[in-house]
Image (cartoon, rainbow, N blue to C red; front, side, top):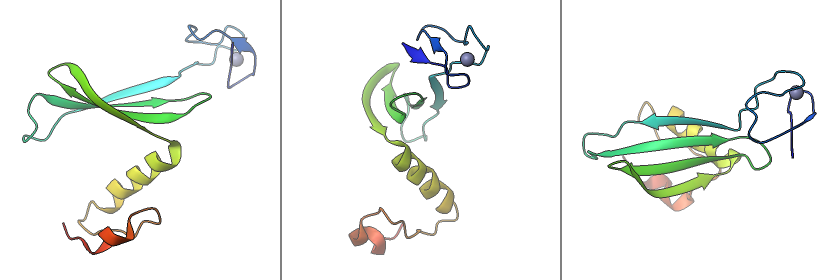
Length: 107
Ligand SMILES: [Zn+2]
């Protein structure tokens, strides 16, 4: 039995809204990303799971079939977001969790 994050009342996993307070019981948000032209026919699906075991799952889809997937915990997902944001200008950041051997690598 799941608990409503808003009011703490017991709900069922199949409920989209809490029957007691009406809060949304969203447990997953999904977004698709289109590929670079060098990866035709593929797509990236990113699913963010909430609840007891939060994670961000990346699935590579090839012609409508999921062919690989990996999940990141919340800290690693946040580090990925920071990496993308910080490297928009093409400058490599010094991330605490990155491999020190790769810091001399250039783009
Ligand atoms: Zn509720």
